[in-house]
Amino acid sequence: MRVSRIQAEQNRQTVIDVASRLFREHGFDGIGLKDLMKGAGLTQGAFYKQFASKEDLAAQASRRAMESAFNRFSAAGAANPDDPLGAAIALYLSTEHREERMDGCPAAALGSDAARQGADVKASFEAGIREYLEMLGLWIDEAEGEELGGKAMAILSTMVGAMVLSRAVNDEQLSKQFLQAAAKSALGLSAGAGQKGQLR
Image (cartoon, rainbow, N blue to C red; front, side, top):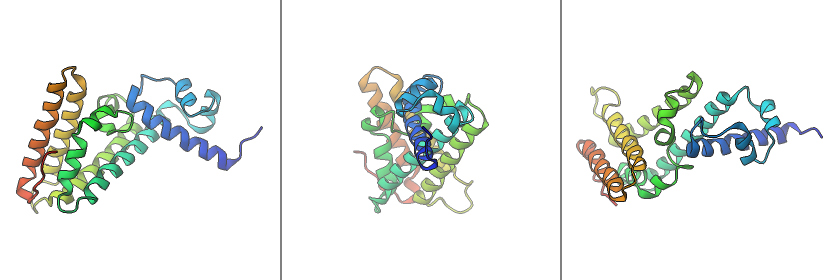
C-alpha cells in the first residue's frame, strides 16, 4: 500500500524527532537504524525512502535537537524578564537537566560525538551554538568594542563543560558541585553586564 506524500512527510518528521532524542541518549554510534526506526514505529526499509544516509539523519536530528533546546532555554529567559540569564543558567545547570539526557542540550550530550562526525552534522551544531551565543550576548548586553561573543562564549563553554562533567561522575555530591561552581562562575562572568542572577 502506497503511503501518501503527506503521510510520508509526517513519518519523516517523526523519525527526525525520535532520532534527535535517541541520539542524545545513546550517541550517534550507540544506536542503529533498526532501533531508530523501531522507535519511530516504522520499518528499517522506510528509512532509505526518507534519508540519504544515517549521517543525513544525524545532521537533521542534530538541527532539531539544537532548536528544541534553544527554544527551551530561551523560554526560560523570556519568562523571567528581570533576569533572563540567571533563569536560563539555573535551568541549564539544574540536576533535572542533568538527568534528562534525551531532551537536554545536545551540545552537552553529543558535543564530543559531533566532533567525530562529518561536515553536515558539525554545521547543524554550529548553527545551534551560534544561536545560543547570540541569545546570551543579548542577555548580557556585551559592551561595544569587546571581541564579539567573548563573555557569551565563556558562559556557554562553562555551562556545557560542567554539564558534561556532572554526568560523567558517580559521586552525586561532586556532580552537584560541578553544576554549582559553573553557575557561580557563569553569573560572575556576566556581573559586569548588570545581571543579578541567583542560584536556585
